[in-house]
Length: 355
Image (cartoon, rainbow, N blue to C red; front, side):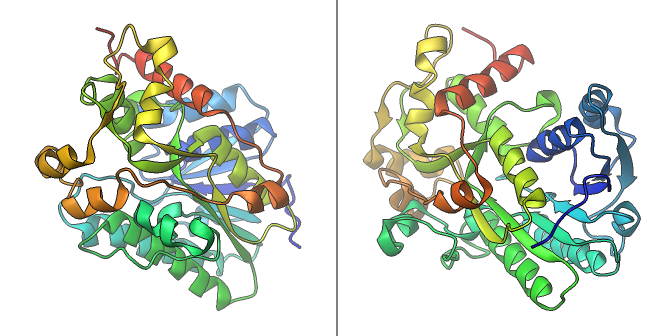
């Protein structure tokens, strides 16, 4: 049981990120002082939404310049904090060197933050943003899992540097976190393992989130001939922020938490938007056949290898979210609300334009 004092500051790494921004807002609204650990604290474009959130809340925000690959760069930001949130990790499908761009920042960055936590005596709890990608690589893994669904006991064993390196980076980073946690007894570790995070970006024009890329594909016409029935778990970004908040401040929280609201697929993500946006945007209305994807997929997107299509398209994705509901009292927003709110933010930002 770890009781965290709300009068003490809290450090959030990658504080201007997609999930982290909503977490920072939640903490500020609760009157908590946030130590925002970011790469470029002077970049007004990337920080202004956090300053606005602080101006509208009772909490305070302080910015600290940090870097995942610079040892010790988080120690100043951690001073006086009992609770540390490590959310910073690259999430992109656009990389040339997966070792350098995905694995190293994820694994070495996690080690850097957690080792620093052991050198700052005030730290009692570390919450790491992991991913369901540390539990599975492809939808076929969820079908093959005991009972046909993902649980917190399962680890990803099918990704590698050559196949799905993003999933591999999340698996190695979380394993590194648990290894460091087991080697000390000063602080306890909790991991939040979200599925695919969607919902409104607080800083839509300055986010590199893969989630925004998918929304742009759905609304921009790239899937107007049809969307693949690619199995995916979905969760609202605001719910993921709330899950982090609860993981930090629930004394009995422990271990890993699958944070996923809906067992869905890419076609459903498009069709749920049809009632509100179908007449203005070229949204997908039908499934793209698997055989067609096997032919054209590899030419349209480097991720759509034949192995990936075989293991994910027309295969259901299923995870068990009972632990987070039971232990942290989480409930989740409906898929329609998540998708409509996410889509509207991109329209308002001028990123998506109606036909």
